[in-house]
Image (cartoon, rainbow, N blue to C red):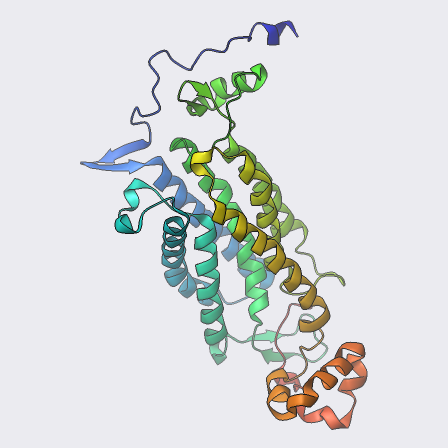
Length: 345
């Protein structure tokens, strides 16, 4: 208690300290400045790629070539999407769209465009025979099968959280993503002065929201990427990817009101709510619809059955095993070599 009382007035890190002192630059290569933000963005991308490759190779036993090719279009897509969304919410201007040195990258836009590009890419490339795998780990009859896009999604999407954890340190060096003044909290001010001095902004210590979001997302990464990735009866392929959107949507909704008004945008609330709603609906559909219709040629049924399709679909959902044994639907049932690989989920 005496220790805290002695901190009743916490001085700034240095009397001459200025937020605009050029400390955003890590070093120079000739006359080219290398910013801390860029360094942490690169580390974030490389770290996410590394853990994804390890998981695909060691745990999922999937071909790595598919992911390598995706990186060539996924990384540029994430930067483009982040820039587009930043301009859309007002964090940057459309007239300076290509001037990224002035800042303006929004993670939500990057994720959205990367996922859209990924869906198109994986749906097309996974049809190639060279990327099919031998499904002999979980199935009774070993077969060479095409891998479901949900399997790759479960491996890739949760790793975005690791990239966000590392990338948030770029916000620290840029003195972004901070909250209200906290000079009335002596112990937290002492922590910032000692560990995070760049949180002294405009003459006051600020809430380090980048740190709170980083720690929450680190927990999310460990939970989705490691703890939850165990085949269980209650989990289906695709759940981990869907849970990323649910997790991050809730995190942004909780932390957004705490942001400094300079870094708070109304559109961010809308997209966060949409993420939560979309993920919740998709998670329910994945269990009661997608997972129970895997063994059926749904598109063929829709085209041929037309108005009777909802009735047949209802029969499948009520008792899929009985429907599989019904000779009337035999031509709509996938053969062993037509079934997709789902890692037993």
